[in-house]
Amino acid sequence: MRGTGRIVRFDDVRGYGFIAPDSGGEDVFLHANDLDFDRLLTKRGTRVSFDIEDGPRGKFATAVLITSEGSGRTGAGSKAAASDTDEYFDVFSAQEFKEAATEILLEATPSITGEQIVRIRAAFEGFARKHGWIE
Image (cartoon, rainbow, N blue to C red; front, side):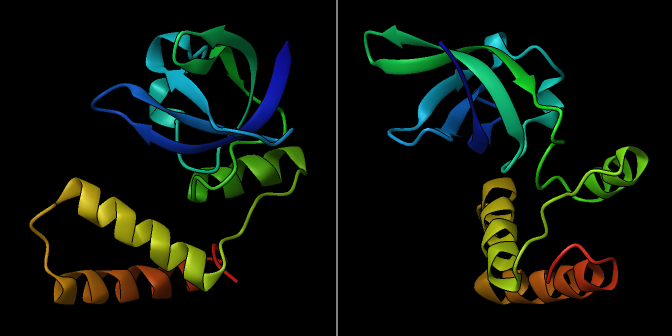
């Protein structure tokens, strides 16, 4: 069965993540070997289509493709791609942006302090607002 959804998490180091299916229900496991595109494009919010299979640990995705709707919340690339194809792209709310930025900072640098996160996040939030990436 073919489904669609958004990538909710992908760990590039471990090579796996999860997709929230548009049909609802539990997230679907995603492995890098099942991507039919460059794994560097696996960002939170990326819209994908995929085949759903049942495995011993639950559902998993195979033959995963980025949908024609674009790649969701992937920053400047989405804006450029959207303007090239006259399609819409997702824009973060300020809160969604802060949450995503915090998660990325903590994953990239576990030793980062709260004060550093607040300063870096504020700088990026100003930059993102200036470019229309957040509401």
